[in-house]
Length: 177
Image (cartoon, rainbow, N blue to C red; front, top):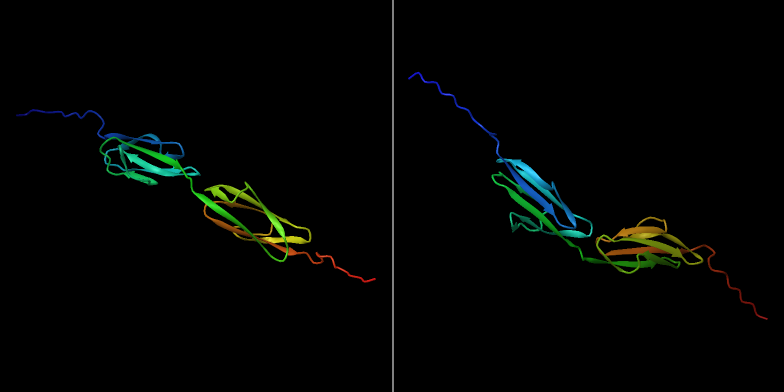
């Protein structure tokens, strides 16, 4: 009747779980590695492709959740895995170079060509012919310096304007004997 009982609780009252995150070639997942999460807590992950890549798919606990850029584990009550895979972006874009104005000239581009992979940086240089001057860019480039760079993330049209220099054409004199 006058018994005294002592109750002792052993161990940690907070249960934790792990989420193992990994990414393939061509991008990152953050956080990465083994992440500890308390029971019933949430944890978000961000998937980011490198330049020239896109997200192929994200696998959570062995099943694809699509090509998502974020994923959140909510109310965690078990261990989980998340992995991201990426694919090289093979999209090509066209660079069109036009010339306008009363003068003449050429536009060189480096790298050369007219079709480029996404993310390619192309440097354009306007070179006026004798008797002409470079006036400026319009379209995918702007400004009046003869050099311009374009990062190919869509089809781009660039126009270089050249004008005749005052006195640029020699006068022609015809004399008869």
